Length: 470
Image (cartoon, rainbow, N blue to C red):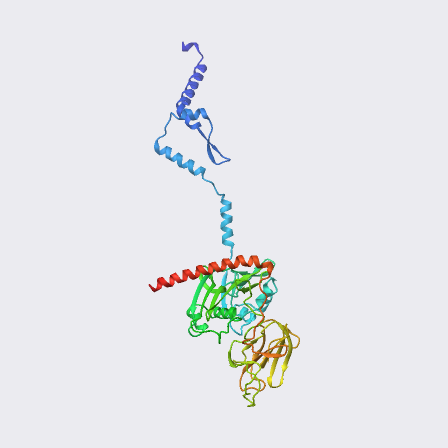
């Protein structure tokens, strides 16, 4: 029958049969084809997605060998991870590497150091110094240096000045940094953590010794004396057995105590009489100490204008030590080393400043209510003290000396009312202004809270003391 077909037709048919057979042998089975079509790559999202639901259903009848299935799972997990463009990685690494490493030099400022000498020690000339202090912001404040402060200079990789840091104290520093437009300075202040603390003491010898034994610093001891100084003469009024209790601030930085702050409240028992003082800041931001009823702890006048002992009391029948005749001593003498500061007893105006016969170098202040105070035998007058100058209570108006008719350095202090001499240590002093009526409701609420807190501190302290004794 094959003879009936031409040879060319037979050859073509044979070749076609071979091709079809090869295609059938080389093509995958239906199951394998279904599995291949079950997933497709989403190139935009970088994930694997379903591409043919029908094919996936068919693929469920096919299970890959375990190693192959695990390999596919790992590939899918890797492809699903968020990818960071290589360009971003490179940019971040470049930016990190481009930040300059600053080298710091630190110097403790000593007496006699100048800004120029400190810049020179750090390797910079006066031209660099001028460019810094003429910078923007607070850069010019770098010129005010004080012994004990610390100054640091930062240089970049090229050896050029990049920053200057002046550490004023633990809480304040001046930072001057180089910018694209030159140098710019800024004061940086840190806020300490403030915690209340309690101290209690009984006077056996002096307030100063008792306060030290109670753990108070010298500054807090002076502040305590200043608070009650208008009501108590700590030289003559204090007796053995008098006691005090104080709530004060402790200041912390980074969890460590570095200093003490102000006295928050205090109680002093003098000869059985109790005096309580509370620190209060009014709505105008003014802070002072008041008793719980709103009376000011201050008086319009200081009881004593100098921290010194009495060497000669007020005595209208005293015999003069130089002239050896009975001559009234119309003031109080305070013995103190030459140069000791003398304070204005109250607000007023300088009525006289200069040499006044046997009084020597003298200042007379005129106050309200026809009151005058006199300060004699000074070594020199205070800065700016002259006739007509206004002064505030506590201002330094002069310094102890021995000018005039005296036997040694001391301050002679007189207190006069309508021209008549009065004993400054016993005269009734007018009170300073109390809490105004407009503030009284606010103050009373504050005072009640402070007194309650004070009592809690006392109770805790007593319990701790009892526990320590057991």
